[in-house]
Image 1 (tube, rainbow, N blue to C red):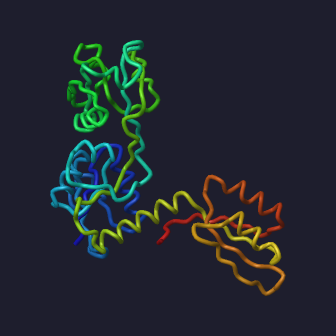
Image 2: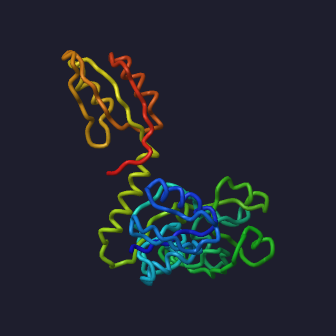
Image 3: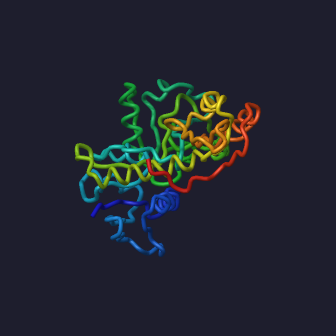
Length: 281
């Protein structure tokens, strides 16, 4: 059986479970369940702390798992990213009191507080910056106020929490993170891992695309297909009335209305938009 590690709590937990369910896997019904066996799909789901998942995958204890890119890089484990999953987005930035730092070089010789010691130490080393990294568990926004550090490195969303502590971000982002599927570095990607990857990719595709069906004059098929090229190419079928063709293509969800307007202007009719619940690529 394929052993998959899944976040047991936190912001990645429910979105991970939802994606696996959409991909056709059985997930837990009780939050207290630690292991779920899905015999039909040949997988076992292990619910683990998000911060530990990359470590378990890197050691080979489980075959693959879902965690944050930030947690993967911070762990230093022998696990590698297989696929970005499109949820759990976050941005890591440096922050300090206004006027004390404006660029990465200003960190040199100072103390940096963070919950992601490995990630920050690597980022500083990659840029040739020598600084003391102070590891803190939990919120780090008060570290400067309490005199623990001169700079902090943390997740920044709106920046409101930082501003409330009299801090502002500076420099380029350390990392743009999201949920990712990971497997052990150097391990052969098995057929089961490939099935999982393709199923998850199908869910991602279904979330970002809709299916568009429409009729168009046969003489305008090429122009219509240029508007709706699909992922690879649209499906074109002849109708009983040979002057018309039926076209089916996937189009980006965010631009559906604009595409429909273009098709109407071109002369297309009977345009139907259908949500894709799952897409097997």
